[in-house]
Length: 360
Image (cartoon, rainbow, N blue to C red):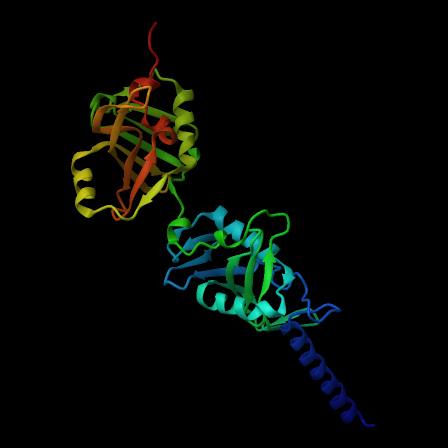
């Protein structure tokens, strides 16, 4: 056998080997019982390479999550709740087949999944195939499409079908007491970050607190050194006798301040009325890069029933200002309207007199 024939033979063997490896990787791996798949066949081993998650139901609701510079975004531009996305990635990494579905039930389960499942598409930076550990044709590609169906009777697993598999299975998360689908919400409101302020103390350049009901209690703080701030009253007079610990504690809380609820169904005329009549506080933060975050706070009125100790109605329902919560709106996002809880903004809502030293 001459060298040319040997070269052709070796090349043929390598081609056949590479084809075998590609086909092997494309198949769902089965153990010795070919009716029971590998329990880890549903999982995504390397969730760090996941770049996009698309979630949709059969009613037109859908969510698109994308990773940008290490952070997860909703519809490419709205910050997502990072913890929620990490939880989903953990689910995708640990999801396992708990058991196969009995042969006589597969048809019914398949029909149920076809009309009432939640679809989850996962995209990763992944190769077309790997040969001897070397990846080829790496790019973003869809690597898994799940169809999550209803929970099992014990509420500890879900019926699931994965595109490319021959039949549906029952899947669960080992050690997790609950079913899977609540983690894959198809509603954007469940994924939106609730953060209003997210600025570390060292990144704050100045903060202005405007009290519209008591203007004399308004004040501002301006950075004078990395961890020191000058205090000014409403007339821009600098004050020197104040509690620096209280000031620094309050400013430190700007590292994360969240709203409670995003209002999506408030009538526009009611919102306009609140904006026009109920404004009572403005907080304006400027960071060291010059970025301004300005939050407007509005009184929230609610119906109150006064009852006796016996539970009898003492007074008619009256409209009163809530002592627990208020409305909020960011200046650069006027289309969004929030409910905020006072206790979460307690230190940011203190008057100037709270920070001053008082002579005994």
